[in-house]
Amino acid sequence: MTALAPIPFVDLDWQHRPLSSALQAALAQVMTDGDFVLGRAVADFEARFAAACQGRFGVGVGCGTDALALGLIACGLGPGDEVILPANTFVATLIGVLRCGATPVLVDCDRATALIDLDAAQRAITPRTKAIIPVHLYGQMVSPQGLRTLAEQYDLILFEDAAQAHLAEREGQRAGSLGQGAAFSFYPSKNLGAFGDGGLVVTSEETVAQTVRSLRNYGASRKYYHTDPAGTNSRLDTLQAAVLNVKLPHLPAWNQARNTLGQAYDRKLAPLVEHGIVPIRNEAGPGHVYHLYVVRVTADCPLRRDDLQARLGEQQIQTGIHYPIPCHRQPAFANLGYGPGAFPQSEALSQEILSLPMYPGLTEAQVDQVVDAMLETVLSASSAPLTSALG
Ligand SMILES: *Cc1c(COP(=O)(O)O)cnc(C)c1O
Image (tube, rainbow, N blue to C red; front, side, top):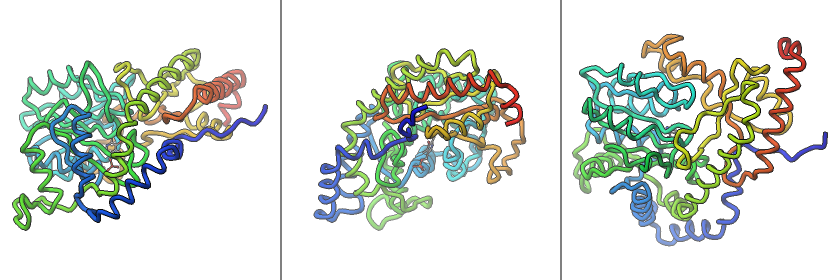
């Protein structure tokens, strides 16, 4: 076999190289202006990003986790309130709920989409339930219609974790516009990434926006007048906002490229379904922004997930697992009292998921290379079942 070029999991350099001079000019401008904290670029970015999400206000904060924590506090959530969230998410969603002081109530996910199971969410509702946090995992929105029905029926606050879903759409609605507020992250590898940490709350409610503005700035509703005891220091840096302002105009094209690549993977992987490689189902169609492209390596596959990942690694194809341990099985959250088996779909998914290379600069030829390598690996394992049983 001829040696093929390695395929990285993500390639940020692909994104930054063509923007290099614009990025450097934007950073230099901040140095010249000297408005390092809550400078002009922050206000510009807040307004532009909120508008792109079809929301009225944007409030930049230090990271996505703070966007969740401060956004939930601003929505009035706190001790005694139950907040429903999926077990199948990045731990930051859970950390955000714990930091606002509310009681997290985890629910299982749909195995095919990896998204929160709204029937399970409905069953978890009690008189103390105040809010639900849908996580638009991997860039696919949870159904807006399903969420609205549930939120209206039980009078719940709807707060989106949109950290993986910048400008995602479903049923004609955009991530960030569904409920009282939404949290975004600009961690470097997200669909829109800064040169470090960054986050933002999008909301159309003026009081929520005002409260997050105060909370991020020591709880000061005006200068040196502190009204919010939960106040902290968590602001989107002007330097980060300057970077994000340069990148934002490119985001729609980057998302489009991700969606096209996602469709290509789906199409090319179709022959592998009978061998137990099943892509996470896209129910959002063209509005799925594929932060990650994830397949399930099911029991029908002759290779276990970890073996397949290792074989791909030997062929210089980088993959990831998002996430290997569900939130409720993390040592930090053992005190929540969810034992093994509490969320069977989430636990099973954590064993079978594999994230394939995905970034806007990936080419269809590289997708072919990934899929060919998977096909070859799986076929050779099925013709030599002993090897995999021993391996
Ligand atoms: C990245 C991420 C977060 C947290 O964002 P940070 O900026 O890293 O704090 C929250 N939720 C989800 C689903 C994420 O992927």
